[in-house]
Amino acid sequence: METSTLDFLYLERDPRTQQPSACIYVKSTGNLDYAGVPADKLISAHCLSFIELDAELRRLHAELDHIRARAKKRFYKAEVEVEATAAKA
Image (cartoon, rainbow, N blue to C red; front, side):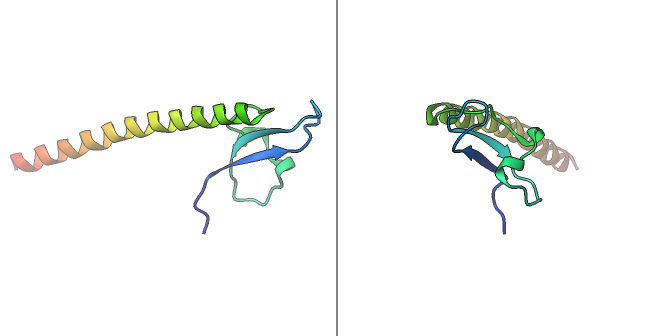
């Protein structure tokens, strides 16, 4: 059973720079090898060092935290509205 929807692509030698690089991507259900990951699945810039990759991971974490906070507000607001309606009935 797959439990993760994100992964990273690491190239020992980026064809453009001849240096190692990595980026984060959304996993697909197909069996694509790393070099075959389509651009529309990438969710980070190409990272030429671990420091750059770590910065991308922190950025993604911050985005997920922001999404979580927005979702929490919406779910709790809906829950309060249901309880208020039930109390009036």
